[in-house]
Image (tube, rainbow, N blue to C red; front, side, top):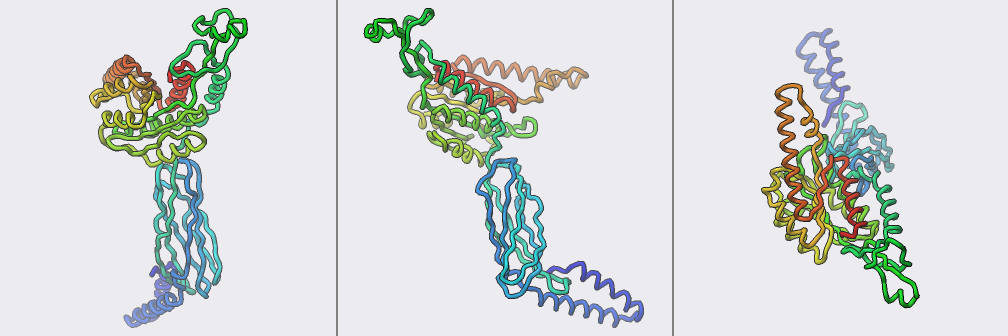
Length: 430
């Protein structure tokens, strides 16, 4: 039972008879009148159990995009009902107006729409739907709450999508114009053409030249249907906040842009998100479904406050790949990472694969390095400079193993990684 403001006003109205007849009996009689009125109103209020509530929710939406959850409320009783309905969602769902006053004649239905603006990836659940049915005097209401199942899967935002058209244009240009004379490890035969001054004599096809009575050279193009393995580090390193968001968000954004680009290039994409355990996995996807699969797998990945297990990562990559591939490690390049076994793992992978390590750097570090106003800022600047030198030393060690290292601020990591992929593909190094 829920009493209304009208009940409070009715009790306050008792001041008048008490003032006229200031006796304890007057107070008792008035309270009995109020209780009787409230009880009668409560008995006459339709039961909330007579309402049938169904929910319709989109299956998935990207973080930061608006979605709508629709409740269909049906009065299955034989009396009209005036109800106040409240729909509850998780706070990160960003629900807008969620309270609705409805008048429902017997046997009729009404629809209410709740706008959602999710701020977090993963599965968002709807909580209880609360229905309050008022009596004819509006003094008291009958209230009940019930679970009405609703799940909204929030996919990664993919903010770097704006960089995709320019990289796809470069990819198309590379496919059409990047025939080269030198055969690389990641190239395949393209065509024959006449020899021109400046061509590598090693590319001359002597059999074709003999058949045509003119010098012909072979041309090669970047091979399609290569394997791209993306490893997203979800350990404590991914929990560090770079600006407003954790490092993991920049890593996921870079993984999505690379997946979209590799899918358009005809390559097969594998995804592995892990720290000490595998948190998400996508096996050898290609074609139009690759982006949906990777985005769905990454939607539920969150940082875990544990150390990364690079030995386990090495085992998982070896188990997934049986041929040479591009292995992209999205992690942090910090001084303490060397003790986790990253360098030996990269060196082992680089013997069989082309390895790229991509790291999102903290923009605040560069700002600290510029501070020189007082002693406190000077110490901060010295610490920032030292951290930068340690990162540079670690990057040098990784490059000596044959790996490529990409370091950029969070907003620039995704396009920089895409450019590295295109450069490796154009050079035939995949």
